[in-house]
Image 1 (cartoon, rainbow, N blue to C red):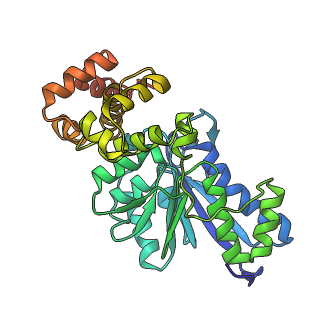
Image 2 (image 1 turned 90 degrees about the vertical axis):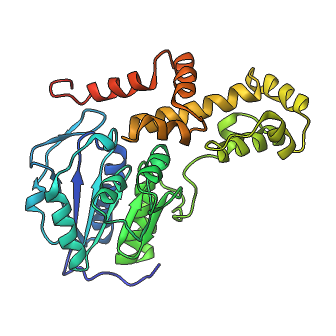
Image 3 (image 1 turned 135 degrees about the vertical axis):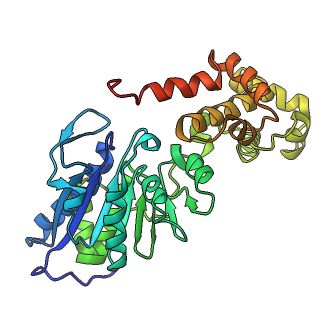
Length: 332
């Protein structure tokens, strides 16, 4: 980070593209730091505009409606343009105009990026090919499945040359503090963080999720090790004997641990996290059900369907159909 400030006589322009059901917390965490940077510096260091696909006001996932300055076709030559989305990004069809405008900006050396699930939109336009990026942890698996050539990390934000992506939530605040530090100096970024009651400016390499001990509610090293192995072997699941041997326990010892901590057998616990992955892929991708079954560690659609119905009360086909109905005209 640098202490050199951007010239106050040439405000740096930013643009925010708000897609339907965008994340309000992510958007607020993007725009408020630059507003505060202007206030704290006493200068207009930054100017910004907001756009929607058609120029109409757009509702966030919390149903709060935001007025915008225009449609994406009206976007100017901003130094940094960020696409902010949120829920159901896989079902949004942004159209060619946004891609055209973003490619124009890239061709003219501008920075582009995304917050929360917006990396999915950039990937769809081919604008992340050859770049490192991140996305909200709930969408990482789906993005990797759909765009296997893209390097997707689980860090809170990624800056790869002129691509800025963050996982959303308060990670957007950390990314913008980094941006402010580069443009207005580290001292200014620290003042913005302080007035935001943000006690620590996090580096991008921080992991998005809590460690397994926090998520599982246990400090038992053997349980944590076993779940970690399960999560790394969803497509190629291990047997209970293999799993126990991997963590240095007998099968019976592992069974007792999982009964005590989860009131389930290791096999039941393992099956559930594989089915959860399958459900997530059904909801977030358009992959064939057989491909999703294989990615979730099942050798056939019939086996996947049987287990899925027993767990969730309906089939994978019905799951996908119910999701599709949510996006039919008039269904909102």
